[in-house]
Length: 334
Ligand SMILES: [Zn+2]
Ligand SMILES: [Zn+2]
Ligand SMILES: [Zn+2]
Ligand SMILES: [Zn+2]
Image 1 (cartoon, helix red, strand yellow):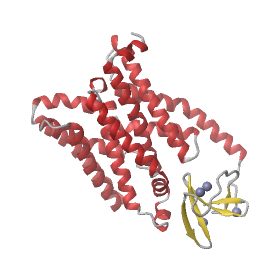
Image 2: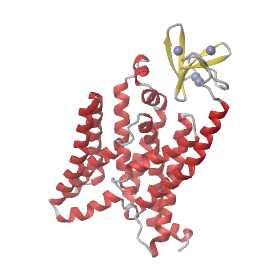
Image 3: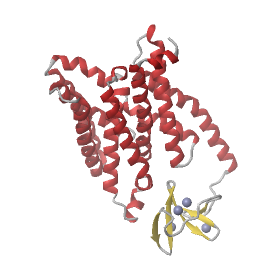
Image 4: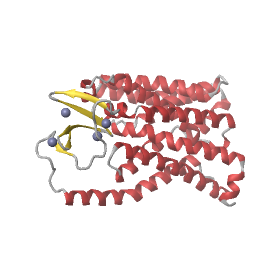
């Protein structure tokens, strides 16, 4: 079957649409998780969502919405535990993850049929996605993207440098919760596409790939979204084209395609980093906290739309993931 013929099948059209929006939304959230060094948070929330799915299946209500609810409860719990910090939280998180998976399998076991249906959610089942599921997926993904992009300056400031963000008067706790809830929603969005056990890969791998070749936060996010969408469509296409001779789960092929992207980008990133080191063998700027930026097309000033942070004798602007202050003809990085 040719790719064109595939696209004429309604169930494949639905699958491609769902894969596309999932591929865009998951890495957008993943960018913040990578920045905050909590790459496995999506995985943890995915495990908690399993219990939500099981409750939905056993009670014959929509597993998507019970999963969203469980994932949000899990996300808030994880965030609260993380705030406590240190080793205790680490163990508490592990208990929550195992509890989510075991609880889900236990609840599903209450009703024999549900155990069989669990597979769809654990490993994805994008080709059986209904029209209503596609609509739900698109609405949730659009919401995730709107918040990710709309709150980008604040969310990034908080992810990058929480202490600075507190000084700047940002409500760090609320923004961390926003990211946790975004993670929960995108986990459930990606659930049908790649499955709860592989959800985290679609959130993190495209970001890791983008980071090989991009330097600013914004370009990383945009590139990761592009790579995520490409991997989702490519993996689905691969699974569909191969389906006459093999039975590949699209979730697995999507994750493998994005890992292949990383394998290709890694040498390029290594080469770029080496070139950068040769050009600047020593850190420029001298005094820490006073590092002039070279080109900067944007002129910051009152009301320029960026977060302004007065401190000491000057005002810093949060812009594209870093904060800097106008200083004569150039900008000083912090
Ligand atoms: Zn500005
Ligand atoms: Zn400053
Ligand atoms: Zn700037
Ligand atoms: Zn300066």
